Amino acid sequence: MFSGEQRVSIAADRDGRDDESTHLVAVDGDRVLGTCRLLFRGNVARLGRLAVDPDRRGEGIAAALLALADKVAFQQGADAISLHAQTYARRLYLDAGYEERGPEFVEEGIEHVSMGKRLDPTRAGL
Image (cartoon, rainbow, N blue to C red; front, side):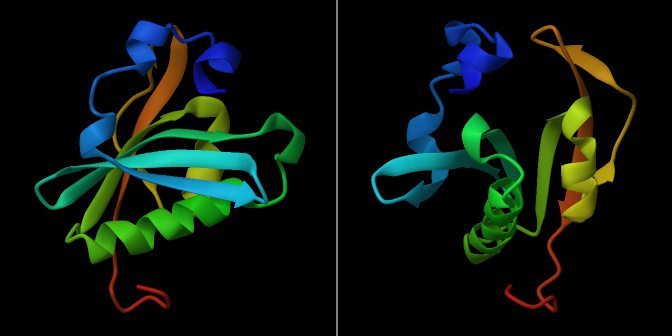
């Protein structure tokens, strides 16, 4: 889903870190609607590989995955999440409480921006 649509090479998408990551998946029956993964480095979770089925975008699936990622990361001992957001998706992450951290850059031929957030255990759901 991710590498084909985004025109990211399979080699770049397969970084060999899936086995050490926590994968979150949104499903409807036997159909995968969306996914992302968390890779833990100390007390920071690195969120990546967020993808939602093109036919189901705009339904809040990505936002739900981000909210679940907050909970899972916190439960696994993280106090922050970082990510590289494609610039066209910046609003999704800003709405989820992320802040930009640095200038835009190109990764795999796609404009990105570093973003991050502190996990606040006083917020509902954490």
